[in-house]
Image (cartoon, rainbow, N blue to C red; front, top):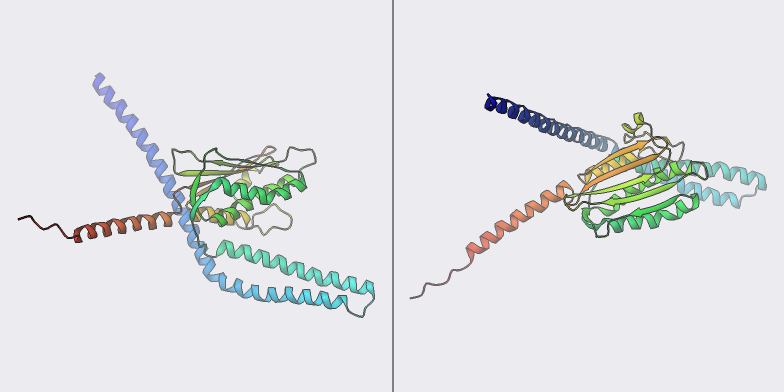
Length: 306
Protein backbone atom coordinates (compact mmCIF):
# COMPACT_ATOMS: atom_id res chain seq x y z
CA UNK A 1 0.00 0.00 0.00
CA UNK A 2 2.77 2.42 0.96
CA UNK A 3 4.61 1.45 -2.19
CA UNK A 4 1.59 2.28 -4.35
CA UNK A 5 1.07 5.56 -2.48
CA UNK A 6 4.70 6.47 -3.11
CA UNK A 7 4.30 5.71 -6.79
CA UNK A 8 1.19 7.90 -6.99
CA UNK A 9 2.90 10.80 -5.18
CA UNK A 10 5.97 10.44 -7.37
CA UNK A 11 3.83 10.44 -10.49
CA UNK A 12 1.98 13.57 -9.33
CA UNK A 13 5.26 15.37 -8.61
CA UNK A 14 6.69 14.29 -11.97
CA UNK A 15 3.58 15.50 -13.79
CA UNK A 16 3.70 18.82 -11.95
CA UNK A 17 7.36 19.35 -12.85
CA UNK A 18 6.66 18.32 -16.45
CA UNK A 19 3.75 20.76 -16.64
CA UNK A 20 5.96 23.60 -15.35
CA UNK A 21 8.69 22.78 -17.88
CA UNK A 22 6.16 22.57 -20.72
CA UNK A 23 4.61 25.93 -19.77
CA UNK A 24 8.05 27.57 -19.71
CA UNK A 25 8.93 26.13 -23.09
CA UNK A 26 5.61 27.25 -24.51
CA UNK A 27 6.22 30.78 -23.22
CA UNK A 28 9.69 30.80 -24.80
CA UNK A 29 8.20 29.52 -28.05
CA UNK A 30 5.51 32.21 -27.95
CA UNK A 31 8.14 34.92 -27.35
CA UNK A 32 10.23 33.57 -30.24
CA UNK A 33 7.19 33.53 -32.55
CA UNK A 34 6.24 37.08 -31.54
CA UNK A 35 9.78 38.26 -32.21
CA UNK A 36 9.83 36.50 -35.59
CA UNK A 37 6.53 38.13 -36.56
CA UNK A 38 7.85 41.57 -35.55
CA UNK A 39 11.01 41.04 -37.58
CA UNK A 40 8.95 39.93 -40.59
CA UNK A 41 6.69 42.99 -40.34
CA UNK A 42 9.71 45.26 -40.01
CA UNK A 43 11.34 43.68 -43.06
CA UNK A 44 8.18 44.25 -45.11
CA UNK A 45 7.86 47.79 -43.79
CA UNK A 46 11.47 48.54 -44.58
CA UNK A 47 11.28 47.21 -48.12
CA UNK A 48 8.09 49.16 -48.86
CA UNK A 49 9.06 52.50 -47.36
CA UNK A 50 12.83 52.64 -47.40
CA UNK A 51 13.07 53.94 -50.95
CA UNK A 52 10.31 56.48 -50.37
CA UNK A 53 11.98 57.76 -47.21
CA UNK A 54 15.29 58.24 -49.01
CA UNK A 55 13.51 60.17 -51.77
CA UNK A 56 11.99 62.48 -49.14
CA UNK A 57 15.38 63.14 -47.51
CA UNK A 58 16.82 64.71 -50.65
CA UNK A 59 14.28 67.56 -51.01
CA UNK A 60 14.41 68.16 -47.24
CA UNK A 61 18.15 68.72 -47.49
CA UNK A 62 17.58 71.09 -50.39
CA UNK A 63 14.97 73.02 -48.38
CA UNK A 64 17.37 73.42 -45.45
CA UNK A 65 20.16 74.62 -47.71
CA UNK A 66 17.90 77.17 -49.41
CA UNK A 67 16.57 78.38 -46.05
CA UNK A 68 20.14 79.12 -44.96
CA UNK A 69 20.83 80.97 -48.22
CA UNK A 70 17.57 82.94 -47.90
CA UNK A 71 18.45 84.01 -44.34
CA UNK A 72 21.81 85.30 -45.57
CA UNK A 73 20.10 87.22 -48.40
CA UNK A 74 17.56 88.74 -45.99
CA UNK A 75 20.38 90.12 -43.83
CA UNK A 76 21.58 92.22 -46.79
CA UNK A 77 18.15 93.03 -48.24
CA UNK A 78 17.13 96.69 -48.67
CA UNK A 79 14.27 96.41 -46.19
CA UNK A 80 13.48 98.15 -42.91
CA UNK A 81 14.97 96.39 -39.87
CA UNK A 82 11.55 95.34 -38.51
CA UNK A 83 10.56 93.82 -41.86
CA UNK A 84 13.87 91.92 -42.13
CA UNK A 85 13.48 90.49 -38.64
CA UNK A 86 9.90 89.39 -39.29
CA UNK A 87 10.87 87.77 -42.59
CA UNK A 88 13.86 86.07 -40.98
CA UNK A 89 11.64 84.55 -38.28
CA UNK A 90 9.24 83.15 -40.87
CA UNK A 91 12.00 81.65 -43.00
CA UNK A 92 13.80 80.27 -39.94
CA UNK A 93 10.59 78.51 -38.84
CA UNK A 94 10.53 76.72 -42.19
CA UNK A 95 14.11 75.58 -41.60
CA UNK A 96 13.28 74.31 -38.09
CA UNK A 97 10.31 72.31 -39.36
CA UNK A 98 12.40 70.84 -42.18
CA UNK A 99 15.08 69.84 -39.66
CA UNK A 100 12.42 68.28 -37.42
CA UNK A 101 11.00 66.29 -40.33
CA UNK A 102 14.48 65.09 -41.27
CA UNK A 103 15.08 63.97 -37.68
CA UNK A 104 11.79 62.04 -37.65
CA UNK A 105 12.65 60.49 -41.01
CA UNK A 106 16.10 59.40 -39.81
CA UNK A 107 14.56 57.78 -36.72
CA UNK A 108 12.03 56.01 -38.94
CA UNK A 109 14.80 54.64 -41.17
CA UNK A 110 16.65 53.39 -38.09
CA UNK A 111 13.50 51.62 -36.94
CA UNK A 112 12.24 50.23 -40.25
CA UNK A 113 15.51 49.76 -42.12
CA UNK A 114 17.86 46.84 -41.89
CA UNK A 115 20.32 46.96 -39.00
CA UNK A 116 23.85 45.86 -39.86
CA UNK A 117 25.71 44.80 -36.74
CA UNK A 118 29.49 45.05 -36.44
CA UNK A 119 29.99 43.13 -33.18
CA UNK A 120 33.34 43.13 -31.42
CA UNK A 121 34.54 42.22 -27.91
CA UNK A 122 33.58 45.26 -25.81
CA UNK A 123 34.26 46.29 -22.23
CA UNK A 124 30.73 47.17 -21.12
CA UNK A 125 31.92 49.17 -18.10
CA UNK A 126 33.91 51.41 -20.43
CA UNK A 127 30.83 51.80 -22.64
CA UNK A 128 28.75 53.03 -19.70
CA UNK A 129 31.62 55.32 -18.61
CA UNK A 130 31.82 56.89 -22.07
CA UNK A 131 28.06 57.48 -22.13
CA UNK A 132 28.10 59.06 -18.67
CA UNK A 133 30.96 61.38 -19.62
CA UNK A 134 29.14 62.42 -22.80
CA UNK A 135 25.76 62.96 -21.10
CA UNK A 136 26.88 64.49 -17.78
CA UNK A 137 26.93 68.15 -18.99
CA UNK A 138 23.19 67.90 -19.73
CA UNK A 139 22.36 66.39 -16.35
CA UNK A 140 24.44 68.98 -14.52
CA UNK A 141 22.64 71.83 -16.26
CA UNK A 142 19.24 70.46 -15.20
CA UNK A 143 20.24 69.49 -11.66
CA UNK A 144 20.02 65.73 -12.26
CA UNK A 145 22.57 63.52 -10.49
CA UNK A 146 24.11 60.93 -12.85
CA UNK A 147 25.75 57.85 -11.30
CA UNK A 148 27.42 54.76 -12.74
CA UNK A 149 27.74 51.41 -10.94
CA UNK A 150 29.89 48.65 -12.49
CA UNK A 151 31.59 45.49 -11.17
CA UNK A 152 35.19 45.64 -10.00
CA UNK A 153 36.22 43.13 -12.67
CA UNK A 154 35.95 43.83 -16.38
CA UNK A 155 32.85 42.54 -18.16
CA UNK A 156 33.18 41.83 -21.87
CA UNK A 157 30.47 41.06 -24.39
CA UNK A 158 30.45 40.77 -28.17
CA UNK A 159 28.27 43.70 -29.24
CA UNK A 160 28.08 46.51 -31.75
CA UNK A 161 29.20 49.20 -29.32
CA UNK A 162 27.96 52.19 -31.32
CA UNK A 163 24.48 50.74 -31.71
CA UNK A 164 24.40 49.70 -28.05
CA UNK A 165 25.35 53.25 -27.06
CA UNK A 166 22.51 54.56 -29.22
CA UNK A 167 20.04 52.19 -27.52
CA UNK A 168 21.19 53.23 -24.04
CA UNK A 169 21.29 56.90 -24.96
CA UNK A 170 17.64 56.76 -26.06
CA UNK A 171 16.75 55.45 -22.60
CA UNK A 172 18.88 58.09 -20.89
CA UNK A 173 17.30 60.92 -22.87
CA UNK A 174 13.80 59.73 -21.94
CA UNK A 175 14.75 59.38 -18.27
CA UNK A 176 16.39 62.81 -18.24
CA UNK A 177 13.29 64.36 -19.81
CA UNK A 178 11.10 62.84 -17.07
CA UNK A 179 13.47 63.96 -14.30
CA UNK A 180 13.84 67.49 -15.66
CA UNK A 181 10.06 67.97 -15.48
CA UNK A 182 10.04 67.27 -11.73
CA UNK A 183 9.84 70.17 -9.24
CA UNK A 184 13.07 71.75 -8.03
CA UNK A 185 14.26 70.09 -4.83
CA UNK A 186 12.96 66.64 -5.82
CA UNK A 187 15.19 63.59 -5.73
CA UNK A 188 16.36 63.52 -9.34
CA UNK A 189 18.84 60.72 -10.05
CA UNK A 190 19.78 58.82 -13.18
CA UNK A 191 21.67 55.58 -12.56
CA UNK A 192 23.52 53.34 -15.05
CA UNK A 193 24.15 49.87 -13.67
CA UNK A 194 26.06 46.91 -15.09
CA UNK A 195 25.51 43.46 -13.63
CA UNK A 196 27.11 40.39 -15.18
CA UNK A 197 26.92 37.19 -13.12
CA UNK A 198 29.92 34.98 -13.88
CA UNK A 199 27.69 31.89 -13.78
CA UNK A 200 25.70 32.91 -16.86
CA UNK A 201 26.33 34.09 -20.41
CA UNK A 202 24.14 37.17 -19.85
CA UNK A 203 25.17 40.76 -19.15
CA UNK A 204 22.47 42.93 -17.58
CA UNK A 205 22.40 46.71 -18.00
CA UNK A 206 19.98 48.96 -16.13
CA UNK A 207 18.96 52.55 -16.83
CA UNK A 208 17.21 53.61 -13.62
CA UNK A 209 15.61 56.94 -12.77
CA UNK A 210 13.84 58.34 -9.71
CA UNK A 211 11.24 60.08 -11.85
CA UNK A 212 7.45 60.07 -11.68
CA UNK A 213 7.18 56.51 -12.97
CA UNK A 214 4.99 55.05 -15.71
CA UNK A 215 1.43 53.85 -15.30
CA UNK A 216 1.02 50.03 -15.58
CA UNK A 217 -1.30 50.29 -18.58
CA UNK A 218 1.36 52.26 -20.49
CA UNK A 219 4.25 49.90 -19.65
CA UNK A 220 2.91 47.27 -22.06
CA UNK A 221 2.75 49.66 -25.02
CA UNK A 222 5.66 52.02 -24.40
CA UNK A 223 7.98 50.18 -26.83
CA UNK A 224 5.49 50.48 -29.68
CA UNK A 225 6.26 53.03 -32.44
CA UNK A 226 4.91 56.55 -31.94
CA UNK A 227 3.83 55.92 -28.36
CA UNK A 228 5.31 58.86 -26.46
CA UNK A 229 4.36 61.11 -23.56
CA UNK A 230 6.68 63.88 -24.68
CA UNK A 231 4.93 67.00 -25.90
CA UNK A 232 7.68 68.06 -28.29
CA UNK A 233 11.12 67.28 -29.63
CA UNK A 234 10.67 63.50 -29.83
CA UNK A 235 9.80 61.31 -32.80
CA UNK A 236 8.06 58.62 -30.75
CA UNK A 237 10.48 56.00 -32.12
CA UNK A 238 13.29 56.15 -29.55
CA UNK A 239 12.17 53.20 -27.42
CA UNK A 240 11.09 51.19 -30.48
CA UNK A 241 14.56 51.67 -31.98
CA UNK A 242 16.15 50.68 -28.65
CA UNK A 243 14.17 47.43 -28.52
CA UNK A 244 15.04 46.71 -32.14
CA UNK A 245 18.77 47.13 -31.47
CA UNK A 246 18.63 44.97 -28.34
CA UNK A 247 16.71 42.18 -30.08
CA UNK A 248 19.08 42.26 -33.06
CA UNK A 249 21.79 41.44 -30.51
CA UNK A 250 19.76 38.42 -29.34
CA UNK A 251 18.83 40.20 -26.10
CA UNK A 252 15.69 41.46 -24.43
CA UNK A 253 14.50 44.63 -22.71
CA UNK A 254 12.03 44.89 -19.85
CA UNK A 255 10.52 47.76 -17.89
CA UNK A 256 9.75 47.83 -14.19
CA UNK A 257 8.13 51.06 -13.04
CA UNK A 258 6.17 52.35 -10.05
CA UNK A 259 4.26 55.60 -10.00
CA UNK A 260 5.91 58.16 -7.76
CA UNK A 261 9.13 56.15 -7.39
CA UNK A 262 10.73 55.81 -10.82
CA UNK A 263 11.50 53.38 -13.61
CA UNK A 264 14.06 50.68 -14.36
CA UNK A 265 14.75 49.73 -17.98
CA UNK A 266 16.61 46.42 -17.92
CA UNK A 267 18.56 45.17 -20.95
CA UNK A 268 19.83 41.58 -21.07
CA UNK A 269 22.48 40.74 -23.66
CA UNK A 270 24.31 37.48 -24.40
CA UNK A 271 28.02 37.94 -23.71
CA UNK A 272 28.83 35.52 -26.53
CA UNK A 273 27.33 37.86 -29.11
CA UNK A 274 24.32 38.03 -31.44
CA UNK A 275 22.89 34.70 -32.67
CA UNK A 276 24.28 35.23 -36.19
CA UNK A 277 27.75 35.84 -34.75
CA UNK A 278 27.57 32.73 -32.59
CA UNK A 279 26.35 30.64 -35.54
CA UNK A 280 29.15 31.99 -37.74
CA UNK A 281 31.71 31.31 -35.02
CA UNK A 282 30.44 27.73 -34.63
CA UNK A 283 30.57 27.26 -38.41
CA UNK A 284 34.11 28.64 -38.54
CA UNK A 285 35.18 26.29 -35.73
CA UNK A 286 33.66 23.35 -37.57
CA UNK A 287 35.48 24.32 -40.77
CA UNK A 288 38.75 24.72 -38.90
CA UNK A 289 38.26 21.32 -37.28
CA UNK A 290 37.57 19.71 -40.67
CA UNK A 291 40.61 21.45 -42.18
CA UNK A 292 42.85 20.24 -39.33
CA UNK A 293 41.58 16.69 -39.84
CA UNK A 294 42.26 16.82 -43.58
CA UNK A 295 45.73 18.26 -43.01
CA UNK A 296 46.57 15.54 -40.51
CA UNK A 297 45.45 12.90 -42.97
CA UNK A 298 47.50 14.51 -45.71
CA UNK A 299 50.71 14.53 -43.64
CA UNK A 300 53.25 12.04 -44.99
CA UNK A 301 53.75 9.08 -42.71
CA UNK A 302 57.23 8.01 -41.70
CA UNK A 303 58.76 5.30 -43.88
CA UNK A 304 58.81 1.92 -42.17
CA UNK A 305 62.23 0.95 -40.88
CA UNK A 306 63.86 -1.97 -42.57
